[in-house]
Length: 183
Image (cartoon, rainbow, N blue to C red):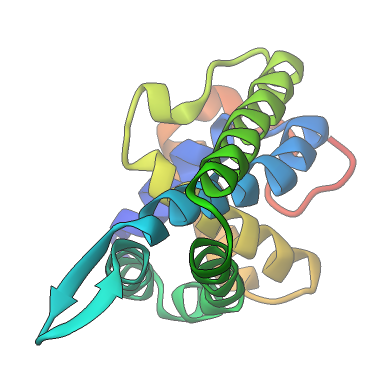
């Protein structure tokens, strides 16, 4: 069976996230960055069919649709994260001052990146998205996949990703893998 785009992208992303400490920092850093971006976008309003909605809703819907296309089960599960993140961003933009919104954005965005960069010190590799910007969209899916694997779900996907790593990135095939909490 041919590799899917999602499997190839997840394989690449995984090779940059083999160290458990790096993965742990990403479980906080990625959500912080996603929420920060949604907070910033929630301030901007656009009209869709004559109805004013925030740019956060438009972008979140588009990205979520892409996630569902890439891998339907993981993509659908992403709604469990994106929904509350979007609701928080919308609430913040509607109930707080613009300066409070931008302060929250800055704290979450800078803090999220600091955590991720700290994790990559342990990994000994630069962030994956520096070589492929699409990896920024894969990061949140990686977290959901990691949770699924830890729960014993999607073993088929885990095996396919590890096979792609063995074929395309053999130097990383022997290191701790997806869902592994020991490496």
